[in-house]
Image (cartoon, rainbow, N blue to C red; front, side, top):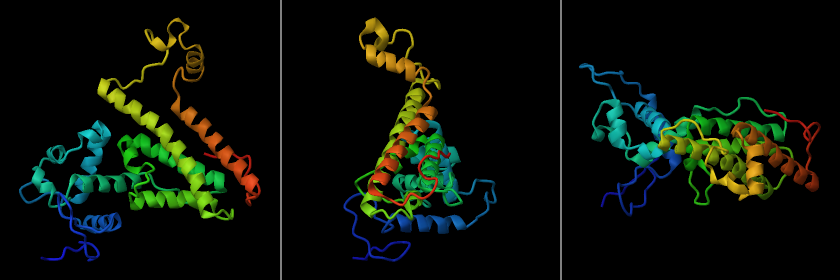
Length: 281
């Protein structure tokens, strides 16, 4: 039997239990191979005017399709149709739909780059990270389930770089790694939790064919009928009529950071001058 090796680094691969044989030993090698293939710049069209396929064009077509119709609409067949080619032609460049989605995540995250300068303090660093991800989920709502917190150890170079950059906000505070992890888990859970509300609204509007989210106090809403839920109805009318997720996101983020700040003070972390009350965006 011929030993299967990684197409990028040459490391021996475990035999696939089911489905297509593995091509790479890790997502890092997969991403490296993508970058190498992307560096090749063939002519955009062949001699007879037929569009020339490239990995980059396929990935961009996948992103455009997912942005417009959601990840459930993403199929290799539909991507091929949008590119004006046959489905099997795509497999010369991308091994599977799973590989295509993994590459889409890397490219989509690169479209919203990390801040180019270091943060002024830990709070500013986390605010930068939060609003960067908030913008990412607005540009590409489909990406949320592919980058969300998971105990299953999924790996993406772009997601790892994003987390590494956010964690650097705590540099100089003398935190134990486990403490920094708990803060990041709290922070990321909040950002992705509110993003889930936004993404859910986008998907619901898409399925209903209505780009506008209905106001919670709309006529006929049983929530407001006959005083059945007086506390909930009053809170919804006061705080979510109309919905302003950007404002709610900012307010909740401030509360999360206030909580981290209070715990840092309790631990006696070296906050430094000006770190306790400033708000940045």
